[in-house]
Length: 503
Ligand SMILES: [Zn+2]
View: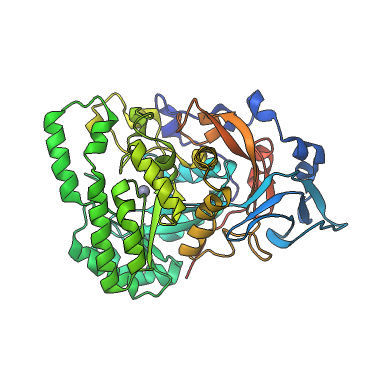
């Protein structure tokens, strides 16, 4: 395979009836007119477009949001892909200057929860979905891999693809589905630096089995034996409660006409019960656990007590759960597991963030096109999942603004906090000399209509489509390179991404 990042669409995908390829990814088509606008300060400086390789850059006049410190007016000097220094009125005759003009500079966003290669090939999505992430401010993703086989046969190849084709840096979480994989965990850890693993207390019918408490305990023991940096990521729902609710509802509503029925089949207390049980087992085994995609008010209610008893429990929610609810977002395209819930659940999630009960915000990005979603089928048969990484940052900026949620705290939840939990801090998730120069220049007042073209995924739909969101990234710095929608096609081959080996 050539070592450059040519966007390629496999033949079989081209032939599919309605699979959507955004027009602007083709080199010979111009960008839509609305996307041609470059923020004034950046346009005037003209520096970012013509910066020769390998010279230092000073980002001037920005307001830096430094996690756990606050908002500070600091210039940032970048050299060799790293943050060289921070300071006021930095100058250097050999450096190019880029005026940030009072906009916010935040660490590159880390989305700790992304799935690639589920409904189409990993080879495609490592390009298209990391492009969606990067252009919208996410510079690092935590990618879940799952297979029934040993990962020893595939990890080298996957890491190779990440290093050659991805636009973001990537760390890997491995799903452990059987005894063989469980026994190989120490090898995954020592050879590949994989410190995070995933299990499902409630699986996905036909795809991922439900895990019972005995296997869960075996898994916890094994991961605890690796060391303090290892963590088990848990999809927590009581599968018996979910099965019971699903059976009843399928009988009562064989052809549901509302996403609310789907939500009722995954009751919030099923999530809370599993969280409580797993937390208890984790205490017995001394392991760090991380609950993915917390969605319900029932879980928030018990989270405070659990965290008081055990400092090694972390909770993640997702940007879709924080920004969408069943009072408004009822399109079948939004079917997800756990489901998008009601307004009061959403309110409780924001309270959980404010009280520091929720540690991180991911997306659970699982790219699907409208065609793959099969929305004309019976709701019970529609596969769960949606593309979300491209709308992650703008939807959160918009919602934080309308919920009066402090910007500094929001930024911590999407940068420093996941970096700390998953062993990437302080190279990632922070703005410090010596750290990777991954940054996002954010205009909190920019308004844009959300479209699939802006989300820049391979999908033909996106969350919040048709709405106007306030607060957008205007430029991204990835490993020292300044990227905008306008220059992406020119610079994309030079964007260097890495597989992040941990441990
Ligand atoms: Zn997931």
